[in-house]
Image 1: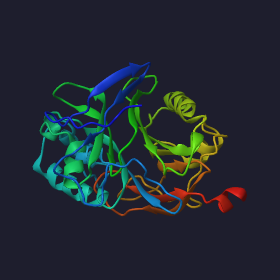
Image 2: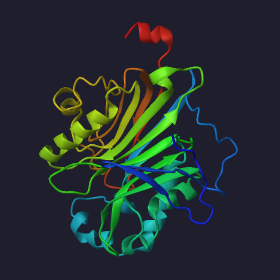
Image 3: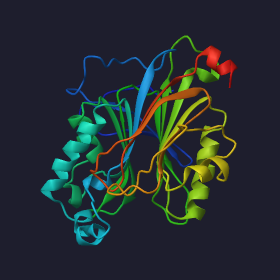
Image 4: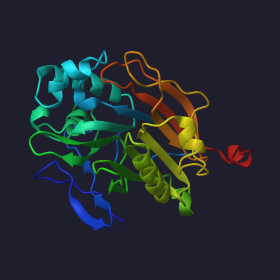
Length: 306
């Protein structure tokens, strides 16, 4: 088990060990951005406590309002622009209302972002004490592309997983949190998997098979992110079929943000967790809309009726 520690010299993740395709990291507490209600305890979910989740593909801070802008504003994926920072501030305002945020298509610090780690920027702006950046495509000064996690709770451990695929460049962050002290055994941990899956079906199937191996045997699980997949396929035909993962009874489209037509951004939870609120937010700050979900642990009475 890893103990949390603060890096006093640099606010950057510290690599501790490598285990196959998984790299474990410390999760840094951002001194100077601590909220009064945030403590160092790792107990985050009690019997009646809810946790607010958000998954958001932020397209490296670029808003898109029409398909043709992928071409006409494509230069923003290479060069910096002042509007990007204004947009990131708006994204931070959205994230501020949640406890755990999964970010996709972030830049870890390259020319296009002004050499700013966008996850760290959002953590500072939205007052998150814990954050983690996963860089999956390192293209030198051109781009440092990846995923991010923002958290108001202190995790036991954070893992950097490089997902398989026809082409490299996809990853998953696995964050493990302690649950309340009254819960024992295998159920004392919440496993949160944050990911961005490939566009190609063959690669997605390989990646979902990898994720299935990660979560098998875990009781309390959340899998969330941009999955580039329809929900029916995920739950009925993909390697996640039979895992017990579920989502809200009714979902809404998330892409494209200016005229949502398909739901490809999902939050899936294990049967031990209840979704009490589901919402796709009308914040057109990217080419995807953010998906917000509130969850809590099932009560003993509810578990008997599953």
